[in-house]
View 1: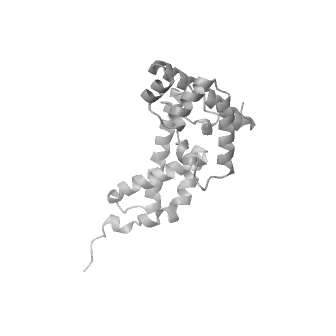
View 2: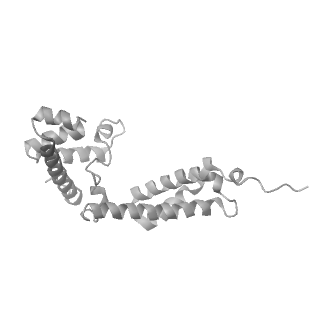
View 3: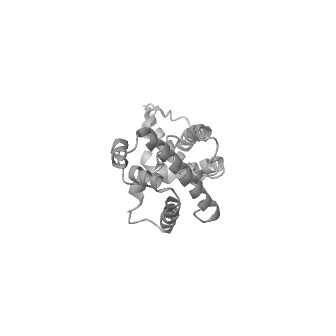
Length: 196
């Protein structure tokens, strides 16, 4: 007596995806995006999407080909997202994606409060903070103060307005100007190796 084909989910091995297919997915994403961080992000998104769709795997193709198909769609999604961000920022950052310290809403792309005190912080992180402090020192004092209170100390906008005796409109202008200066300064640092 022959048994019907096993359930497709029984033929895939999610616990082995990263070991078995991670390198090839990364190489594919890197060849399309030419950015190691973006490629890692796309591979992570691929594995998460595959996990969510594992019951839909038909079993007709190889597991690697199925994952690669998902990865191709995630690369396209990433490029679309990136294009929208570039358009929203006026394309200022096309030359150096690592200069994107803030998203289109002015929020940190990473939370500096969590990276500052990690024991595994390396030389690159120390260099970043040294350059960042140099850039922060180049700001007018009110811009520097509101930026530190908001982004590093985590105070709310009403708290900062009360503390500084300013309106919320004035706060947003100061934060916007500070972010622009810091972005330009850090971009110069990344390009030339000096905070200006």
